[in-house]
Length: 350
Image: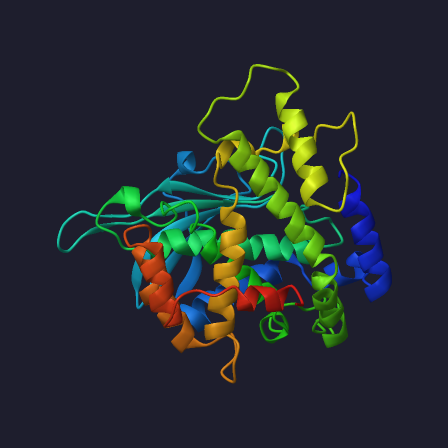
């Protein structure tokens, strides 16, 4: 399965005439960060501003910047942006909780602190850091986790922000990805780093069209990952054999996907989510369904995605509760009904 993404990417680029280098010129990192500021302001009435470190020992590297999230002059929490690669640094994108929020007294709340970690190319002497659209999507995804952490107001820290049930915790982050795909949002910050011209609508449409290409195969692959994860972590212990997990993976792949397993390959041994998400990887598929439903119910309409009413609803009915309220109740409150997979199927082009 290792060369599937390569060929899928080639076919997408050919069919939809996507040149990632041309598109990246419209996504300088500074502009993308302005896009995050825009979401904070338009949706939640929040201000995101850089603040100084308390002292030299607070910061673990000179590239890291500290930002405060405020509302009506009140600081809600802090985030560190660590966005460039360096030796021995965590090599993927992630949101890390440094300190959870919790109620200290009737008038005092412990402010949450988080880190948003990415590995974007550093600026060159003649060019800023330029992101691919996939990296923009990743940035918005992780920022969804950041907002979940900083906006929650719970009694206990072990229920704060992303300390929600595993099959719900990815929902806010997947919801924020949608803003990176909506031209009404993207056009406000995606400007060419030299000319200042906005990203042409045709380029954005090409990206959107390519998104549904191979969407069924991608979903099928996610189902395979989820099934393997559940199979490996089911209650009965696995037989003590070095070939057990490979045989299990081979049988699942051959029976549930269109791409047969290639003997001598062991992709599952490099699939890190099997450890961190033991028996919970299916939560990514759940999140896609829930996020699509929330997006189409609240952010697709005449008021557009940068809609303060929908943002306030998201804040009050979902984000503020962290993991302190049953996710089923949160979703019903947010949607006004039970969740449905219809919007997700629409996103797949079905």
